[in-house]
Amino acid sequence: MDYPHAMLSVVDGRIDLSKAYDRGMGVWDTHAITYGYKRVDESDEARFLASHVKAGSSAGLVFASDRDARAAGGVHPSAHLWDTVSALRDILNVREVALANFDGGAVAHSTPFAELERVLVPIYYLHRYQVEAAVKLIGGVRYV
Image (cartoon, rainbow, N blue to C red; front, side):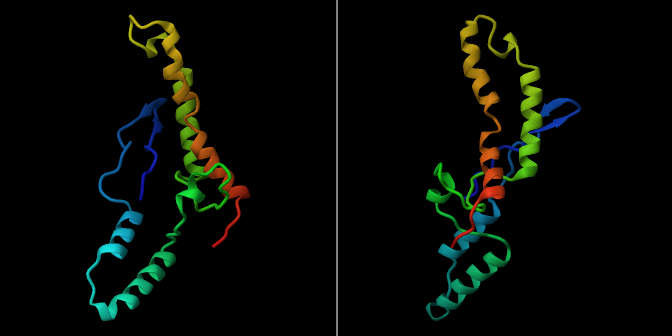
């Protein structure tokens, strides 16, 4: 299933959330649901499924299991939950702006400053999944 990272960006020096989440289903979702649920005549089923897999492959859709995508040792460059190098640049820009503007105002006025850690950690590690995706592109191993 498509679970894309929020599309965060920096516009005029400020973090822009206006396009954070897309609407509708992703390309992979549509492909997988069509494969699993499209009604076809039983006599045409094998031919339909084979042509659908071939069309998906031609469109650049590659199946990888969660074991390949989520495991710390997963190395397949197409098996990652997040985007690629351009997304890494974008998220690093967002992280830089967020950290530059991080201060005591990040928590409510009456909240102890010790709670700043809860707000800081997700910002500090905002780029971690994009880094993992980029590393797989650079040093990953393509396998079937």
